[in-house]
Length: 57
Image 1: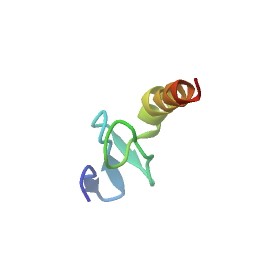
Image 2: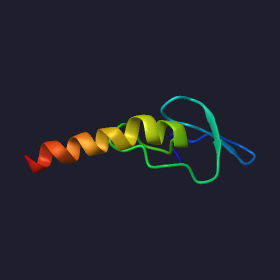
Image 3: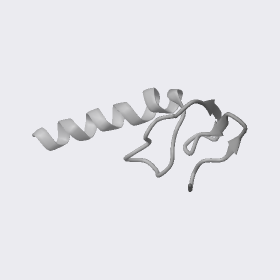
Image 4: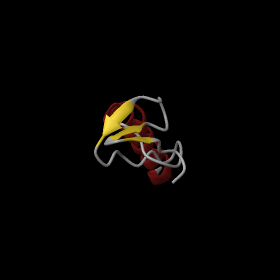
């Protein structure tokens, strides 16, 4: 799988390069792979909300 580097149970975020465990989050619209919870809340979700608002106008 592209964008994920496994180290046992830990994985590398495709956006910031930080380490996370578990399933991770879908980083679309930024990248393919998986991202950490911090990037999901600080980057991905706000961008999705912004894009949704742009589509609805």
